[in-house]
Structures are given as C-alpha cells and as structure tokens.
Image 1 (cartoon, rainbow, N blue to C red):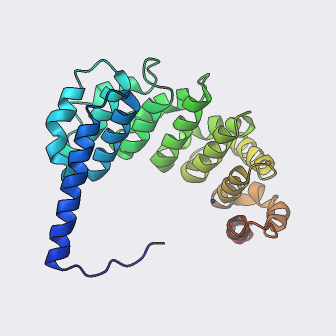
Image 2: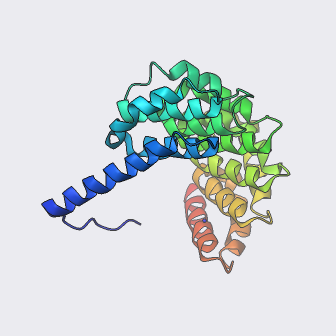
Image 3: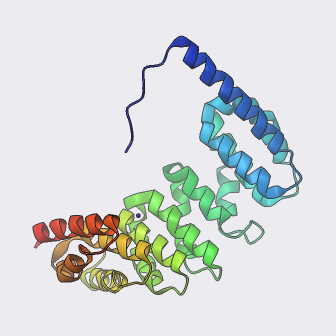
Length: 258
C-alpha cells in the first residue's frame, strides 16, 4: 500500500553466503539466551525464517521450551517446526497458545499466521480472536486469517464487522483479510452486508483501509459490489499512486462482473 532476477553465483559466492548464514545463525543462537524476552522472540522468528539453514539452533531452541516465558516457548516451537519440518510434536501447544492470555497479546495469532496452511485447525480459534478485547489480538487474528486465504472465508462476516473498529490498524488488517479470504459460500444477505461494509470503508480516513477495501470489492465482484464503481472511479484521482492503481484494478474487475 517486484522482484529482481537473481544474478548467477560462483562457487566462491555460495561459500560466502554459507559463511554469512552460519554467522547469522550463531548470532541468533546467542540472542536466544538473552535476558530480554522480546529479543528471544525475534531471534526465534528469524531462525524460523531460515528454516533448514538454522539446524544448528535446534538444541538451544529445545532448551527455550523449558523456560518460564510462554511467548518465548511459543516462538521456539514455531522455529522448530520450520527448521525440522515436523509439526506434530508442537501442534497442540501452538494451537493452545493462539488464545492463551498468558502469551503476549496477539503473538499466538501471529504464530498461527506464520505457519499458515500448516495449521488450518487454528482458523476457528482465530475467528474467535476477532472479538478479543485487545486490539492487538484482533488485528493479529485478522492478519493470520489473511494468510490462510480462502480456507478462512467463514471469517468474512466478522472481518466486515471490524471495518468499523475504532482502531485503524484493526480496520486495515480486516480489509486486507477480506481481500484475501473472500466471502466463500456466504448467503445473499451476508454478501450484501459484507459488500456494504467495504463500500463504507473505501471512504475511511486511513489510506490502507481505503486501498484494501477497494481491492476486496474488486475481488469479490458481483452486481452489489459494482454499485461502488463511481466511488472507486473517484479514488482513481487520489494523489497516492498505489491507491490509484488499486482503485483502477477494482473498477476494471467490477465492470467485467456486471
């Protein structure tokens, strides 16, 4: 709100990259032993992103599982899943952390989103989290559902309700999630309510909310969503070029769905 082609690499470059990765893993392993828990969380997440390249961290991550901080234990489990490729030893504990009040607000949902379709059982729990009293828990749940894509379309009505949330971060994560999950098998009345909420959201004061709501309308399509083509056409004149292009894509899609 591109990617570039990779340059051919020589053998020396590959060896250099291996050395860099080893140094990075070593530094992250040291961070796992930091007294500040947020440092541990971030280190475990970074190790999870490295996947099999971080095999050397497995013993220290396993040691974190015996620590006192539940959020550190959660991210250590996520890292172990990503590094070892084995989710079963950790599945239930990660699922239980999604709505565990002892885990730092939103981190349980964020962990589920990190694992994505490897943890589809988290979707019903994430949908419940959309009603959590903490804004952090609500937007993290919406973000995780967005990662789940169409498998989480049952969340569409609750996500639409969050487009009126007082917290702008919750609103834009909800709009983003709707653009990713769609409306699935929602009945006519539910579809109209969701589309109407998105139509209201394209006038939100927050640019991210407007942009993601426009994208969601374009992706949902249909006659009901096409009613907002005039509003989206106006958005095409916005000084923000990203909003302009997003609105133009939505208009093109909606004109084709009428």
